[in-house]
Image (cartoon, rainbow, N blue to C red):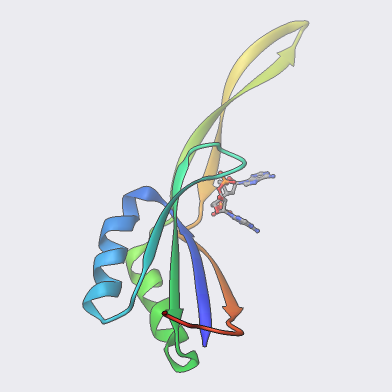
Length: 106
Ligand code: 2BA
């Protein structure tokens, strides 16, 4: 068995959770915050048999989009601090697939 831990953008969470549940997967949704942008994102936990990992990964591919966002940064030029916006691309999904040693729904 594997535990899939997926960090996705909040905008993609409703459709992704719906697609997973419709296909019979159990999912836990956790509100999380990215360390770099310090903005809300969503972490999903899904426990699946090994043979289902690729099917779940395919659902994430279909439901999660890459998006650009803009981040204000202060840049010093000619002795003055100026505000600039830099573009940051946020990936569709950051996935971790972990081995599960023991699963006991007591
Ligand atoms: P954040 O940490 O808020 O990062 C948002 C996006 O900012 C990242 O998108 C990446 O494009 C950019 N970014 C992050 N750190 C950077 C840095 N040191 N320099 C330049 N750009 C940087 P993603 O890579 O798609 O990550 C989206 C979210 O997934 C992250 O939000 C974080 O919450 C999570 N994540 C990504 N990689 C992770 C990892 N190795 N471990 C734990 N969480 C991770």
